[in-house]
Image (cartoon, rainbow, N blue to C red; front, side, top):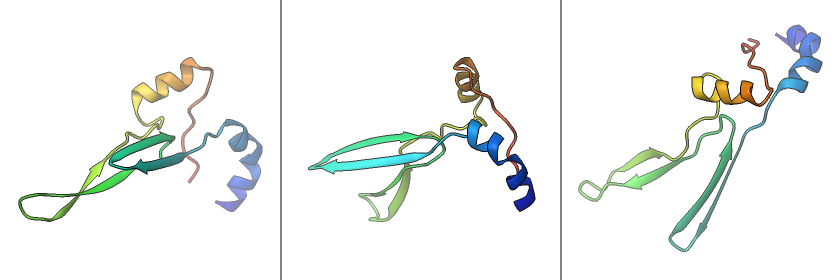
Length: 84
């Protein structure tokens, strides 16, 4: 793995993207921005039982999603298999 990364680092760094999630809560309003395959999830309390349940707030921007892969390619990007 390390040798593969070392050998391919210039290619991987030149064609790689980024991920980020930013959330700001102002009063009762929640502002969210994200890119890449970082995911935002919030815990919401169910009124009936009082249990906290996860609610996914974002959809991953990843080439595994056909629509996202098409978007990347349409803008001149490339989608390569992960190096593992």
